Amino acid sequence: MRQPQRHNLLFRAACEGLKLLAFMVVGFISICLLWALFGTVEQTEALMRVVMPVFLRLTAGLMSLFAIAGLIESLE
Picture (cartoon, rainbow, N blue to C red):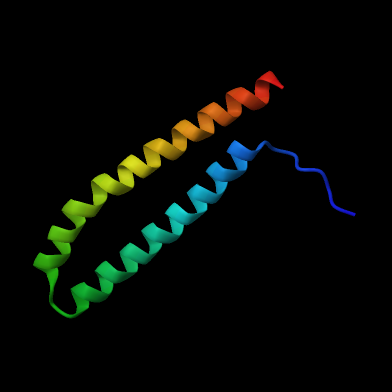
């Protein structure tokens, strides 16, 4: 017998998105550390300047989804 879903679809999607974002950030940090070991510090810095705004936008979007999902859940 399946348990009923406690949260709405938007909240579950935001949680999954946050989990994927965390995996992406951890992977990116691992890659940057690995590249720094091989002496490509300049390229790593350039990559960080490009990728950090993307991570910030994804984080802002996910936080907005959490706020909307919380509002919808409070109205139910």
